[in-house]
Amino acid sequence: MEVVEPKFTKIVDGLKGSEGPVFDKDCNFYMVAPEVTKNDSFAGQVLSIDVENNKSSVLCEPAVGGFGGVPAGCQCDKNNMLWIADMRLGLITVDKQGTFTQVCQEDDAGQTMQGCNDCAFDYDGNLWITAPAGKIAPHPYERSMEEPFGSVYCYTNQKKMVRIDTGLRFPNGIAVLHSPDGRPRTLIVAETPTKSLWSYEIQGPGKVGDRKLWGKLPGDLEGGPDGMDFDEDNNLLVAHWGSGFLEVFGSEGGSPHTRIKLPFAKVSNLHFKKGTKEVYVTEHNGHGLWRFEWQRPGKLQYCDTLSV
Image (cartoon, rainbow, N blue to C red; front, side):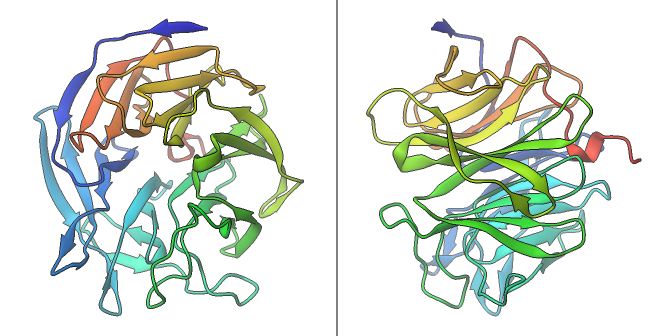
């Protein structure tokens, strides 16, 4: 297994719970600080980051019914709207003025939504979402780190919220592998405490085949897979929280073929800048955002694909 140690540059730090890195269509950068609290209550923040001048500002602090959010994962759509997986509020949207909206409180079957952690658009505009928390606020805050009640959803391009699987221990990072012709082919979900990456054959919007083991992360340390992103050759870069490495898997999974050594241990997520080899990485040691250059550019994001 190859180990590489690229140069890392710190952009900002001190952002509590540093997570959810994403670029919009105009190359503006956003992320979240889910661990911010006020008066001992959740008050997570969505942040706008000036990556050239190393400055952060608060775009909004989502809350619904008096319950503050725990925003954790971000994506951008073709309308430049941010979609955010939130551990207390489920799925929310945030526009460039910081106006936030809770997408739904129940899934298509009438079940209360679970709190969400990360999300990934496929090229057809379906949003695939991990949900490791219990029922959204006002229900008590629960996490599936020990008990396997974590779920996976798909919010389809027809605006249906479908729960496609459950029974997971803290499903976390999520990514979609596409066929060469751009069709969504495989959904990959990280299960953090078991150090597992699971795959599902995508059969259509909100429809998948059986869960299969796709990959395993090395070591027996505390932690496991968190956020992830594909490069243009369909190598999957996976944040291995607690290890001090990003693990790089080939498109067939299995074991990582390369490890990227980090200047911190608790890496939480990563995101490529469009058209570049630059990777933006969040971490939980200094709660910061860093940048490094990978060997190849990232895969095109849904918001940057051409509309058919």
